[in-house]
Length: 61
Image (tube, rainbow, N blue to C red; front, side, top):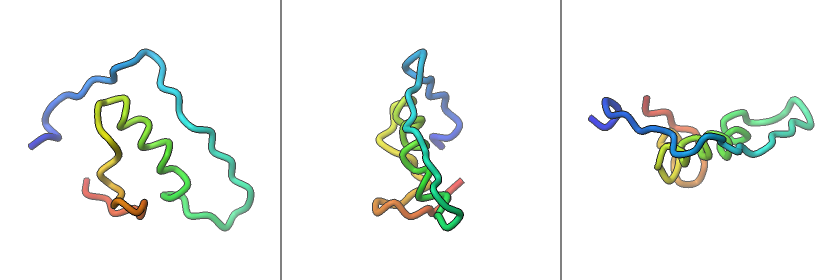
């Protein structure tokens, strides 16, 4: 299984998008998707696989 492998981060600094929460009515998984994807990108992946293509949170792990 791929989860047993090591995928090192390919840079010293990971620049993650700024998150601004303007009110209490927000969807946390949707809000954090760009940040989570940027961390996965640094490990060599296109995106987090815990989101389906349209951006909906569907955790697999």
